[in-house]
Image (tube, rainbow, N blue to C red; front, side):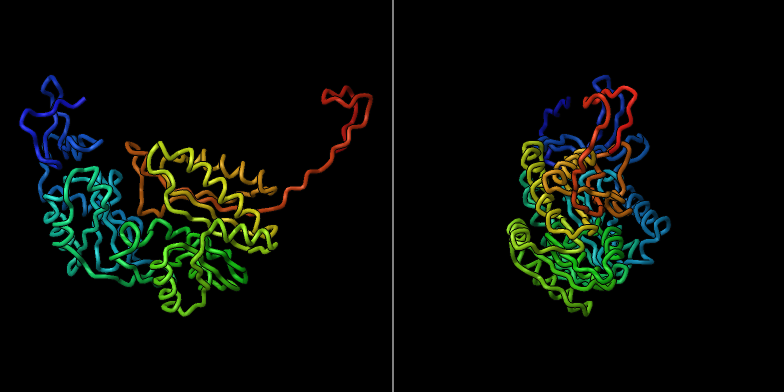
Length: 393
């Protein structure tokens, strides 16, 4: 629906958008190379896209996190900008103590990084800034993010606090911005069920769930992952919190199959895999994989034990994820007693004009073996349409 200008503009140019009748629509980021041709940032004709605009957006975001939510009372880290939900399509900014990690998903932020950095330093005096672009995004956007990343390298790591948890975040090799702040509230919730329990944290990354469980009195905790660098950081984090966690470099699927074959079980199980569906072509495989891993996980939980299973694939809806869990439970021969369905932490809001921002599903459930009880029919007929007879079940 976009009539491209005769003079080709560079990817990421800030432009004004008008209808074919010449009526003002808005201002935003234009990129003829991207699947998202225009990212509208404002529909207010009196609002120019300048440094003051971005400072105002950052101030509004800070107000939500600190004045409304009060996150700084329990943590020195939070997501400051969550893309469209904070009015800045294609931009993620995470605060880790005094370090801000900018992850741009649009070419438009390359030319205005200085505006954003200076705004951050104005709102947070002494702030350090790192720009961490994603290589796949650069390819899709048709632009080189490397120069701006070199201008703002940031420190290699930073130590953060979250509730009782202390974590060192690797800003050089960590996934995404370095740490998954979206699970903050779920880590706290899960840890409260772990006192005296054996805990198995699958896809543990840098150990957040397992360490939180031990801090709340878990009997033991094991974390498993295939990312060796993440496990090295997990060990460091366990030492930082003065708790003992056993970390193993092993495939989760293989580990759970071996447990089931040996008849081994755990009291609490966390399943938090990486995104399995990045686009529609991966949906079938994602559904199948979620089904497999949850079936295997349910088979190794003691009767009455707790399962926390998550999906961060935005394309997989909450309804679909719950349907997958229902099938997995049937295949595993168990019944799930779901007592909480949560999402991302409150610093990851979603907007009514961008519901796709609600991507994380976190399902808390107790797991019980399914026992099929026989039903006896007494009366003149054995069919379901019994006349005036009493059914004893």
